Image 1: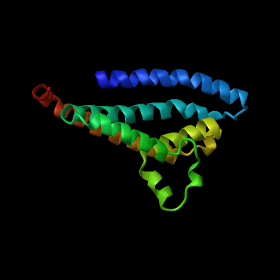
Image 2: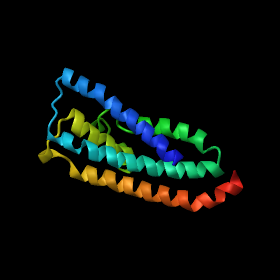
Image 3: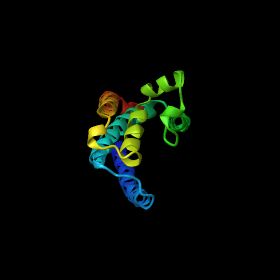
Image 4: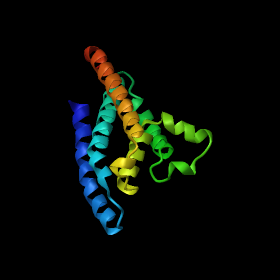
Length: 158
């Protein structure tokens, strides 16, 4: 309950942050199209990805206390390796292949398609949505399985 409740609290914060974003999109006259209907699907997929990651890392943190400190460094590096503030087409060569192995790449690109590029239903990239959901499913299954397999040993460890 604790890892999932923390993630759900951040989800509520994220949903409230969409309100000023929507206002800015309207002010700057960004074209919003029918692709906005996929926004809840992207958020749901990202939620399952993060829950899986949270369950996995919280289970490991019980046994290896350095997980939290290592996670801070990894998260910072992950942020800069994910195309949040720059376009993917700015990077070429071997680095562009690296993005295919970054799960957040698919979620961020879906947000870009929906919110900034104004992708319509006809031009929406469903392969990115499927890839994002594949990463989310894998993360959730691995996190859930690890969490429940290690749970009985927590009492001895704590």
